[in-house]
Image (spheres, rainbow, N blue to C red):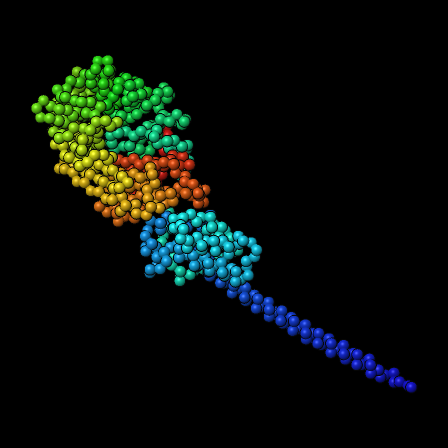
Length: 599
């Protein structure tokens, strides 16, 4: 059989067709696969975006609920922000932390924490890791709605810190979510990070039991610190409303003990230091260590020009004596003879600035109070006597402090005398230099309280665990006002004043109350006229549970001490960062005082 060489065999042609059809089918199938894959990719991507949007939305709601609307700046810490919000909220009743009768903050945030966990799981992000973002969010949700502990007080810093760190690693975005009510404004307290070492009274701890205040208040605040563990001890500090200065005592006084400031001190003068048992080991000038004498002392005075007087008991001669010394005059010792029956000179005599005051029983008229001016030079130690008037109660006796104390302003010298049940105050407008007489004593009901003077007014202030009490007195009489402490610090036991951390003082006619609110409520204050203080908001002065810009488990605050004069107060904080002094002014502003040291 012959074949046409130009004609392809049928079998070959059919094979080629099959190959072409197969190729076309493969191409079509491949295209379908590609299209399907692309569609799947688009769909998957869309689902991922929606899942991420859901996560971001729920995270934004939780963030707004937990830490508010203000973004966290670089270096800010979510747990500290939440802690500051807790400080605001924990003293408020539940209804004031709730929106329109809803769940109070922060318990209402539990719903949002749970929603974050669910969104994370729905997106398929959860693996076998039991500590992933969903697990932490669920842990937080359970703690926020737990009935075992109050979430507004309890420490949630650990789960909050972990959750925000995880969210940051996942680059979760915070969006505006107006449908979620934000918390109240956060407190902005000082922390140990706010306290600068170069502003410290001491860079190391010392017990405030070793700090002794001048007992009679002038315009300046003075105290002495005697603590053998401190290299600068002993030292004397003088605080005014403008500055704070401290100075080491001369080296020759370092070996002495029992150092106290028992005399009154004029502005511009350096205080006298009494060593041993109230001067039994010597009375010294604090700047030069010059000795005046050794004598058990009831008090004294040092003037700006260097004149000094010391009142005390001469054990050798068994008599009451007044010592006088000035830069131009040698020491003069004058015995004091009194035509009075006096049970104990410690309780019933005093030198307050330029005034000698004595309480005693007269031969005819019972207990009276007398005053005489101290004369600086000459044989006579005193000027004419003034019978200020009767004191209808004897002193109680047995206490470790004198019954006659005082305070002074430019407008008046005030003498306070403790009776058995009440106290009595007398006023001398302008002091003896004015030539005015003391006014008849007025009765202040009750006993106790810190005495401060403002203008021609005196105030006795005491704050106990049951009440805050102020007695304001003028020459015309006294008025007592009291407020239940619960009306100031609240009734919640979680924020009740911590033992040893409650104090009060008068600052320019206002009541200042400072307290540590339980173990977690920070150091707080209120400042207002006593009639208004129950309605005044707290100010969180210091958070003792934040250090190194992180929430901590242990308090950094060891002790506090509140000292006051007429127009300012000083709050001493004994912390892990050292001892610092905060000045509080009549407007309620507070700030650390930089100590000017002379060593």
